[in-house]
Image (cartoon, protein in one colour):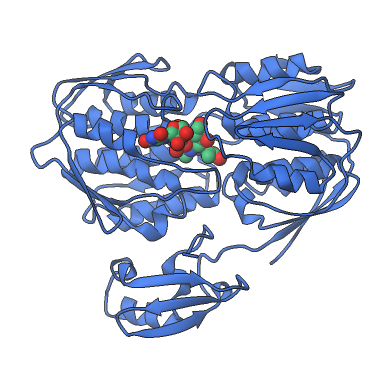
Length: 492
Ligand code: EPU
């Protein structure tokens, strides 16, 4: 198996003396990484590093190095009742492309409300690899100085840890006329091709070829606006739209993206780009029109609240038959979710800058089909499946964005759920209660679903590989415990 644990870099696996001698000789360790292959050993604790330059094998332990992968474990005691108020953080999936957008405007941009997550750190690492300087102010603001971009390369070792790394491709190409970005592989939620990203950039005049697993994109004479249809077999693409949108801001003339993603995170990116001086209209619709400009300016911008984090806390309230207040949460961005909640008997009402959610009776059954926005979000499919597993009767969950995104099904069945997968559909037979078990977190949202299951299950649920949750939820146990949860993080 090839290096797929997320949150680690090849640098992390190099013996200390190798890293430090590279630094002493002023060699960028990233430039050496292509020469190093990493294998995970059978026990997943030690790693064998094949140092191709020196023809030797080195055994390394991840815990000895910086930026190590956390192997923390959660112990979640249930069932609990929750009460109180929680503030929703800025959106991870809005922050990541907006961080990439700062490449387009040389200078210092300030991003506000960017959450403290491992995916954000990895994105920062990626930008630093290009030449950017990144700091966090004491007020939490993320400052990205993109004055210098002297290495337009997105290394495999970073992009394979965080697929959103692909969204530096468009802005790098627009700014530098050239970009080399590793092809992201598939991941725990299924195949994740980038053909639509490449189709869009080619339409803008980029020459693209693949070499050694890298996408090499070139546009030495700049990009040219064009009408582009971006729909694919599963509808629009979120990061594909982000990539082409960002590239088009600096292209000559007008670009029209038809079948653009309408997700609030893409609207947020477009609003941020307009604040930087771009000329984008049709924001939030499937038809984006971009009139190219000569240059963009650095920006100070606050990202939108995270609708998926909000949805996860909403399910936490619902599954524990509790009442919670959510601050800093936009129900307008979550109408499909709100509709489903009301249908299954959960009360949710806007209040202040957020909402109040409560369950006072049994959970009713539902049929949920995930779709691109404004449909029901795939990123809340796993969490709602747990909720429906306690409904009075049978529900159906159909996944139409990532048809294989069901890693949580087997784990939830270990907790006495009754789920049967049939292709991209899961039949959820409601059970009276969930029972704690030892389970394995597999991807970000599936892991969040396990935490939710643990809140409602009888006994102590042990969740391994908590690092998946840390990718997208900031210290989730420290947010849930003050509300009444009993979650202990044990250091791995
Ligand atoms: N697709 C193609 N060709 C492409 C691109 C996508 O066929 O070139 C397909 C995909 O295979 C998938 C569908 O189109 O079936 C939608 O994929 P999309 O490109 O929209 O996904 P993404 O942009 O890679 C973002 C989020 C995901 C979220 C999806 C769908 C970020 C960083 N990631 O991914 O978030 O599930 O949109 O809404 O914004 C998460 O936060 O846990 C997460 C996985």
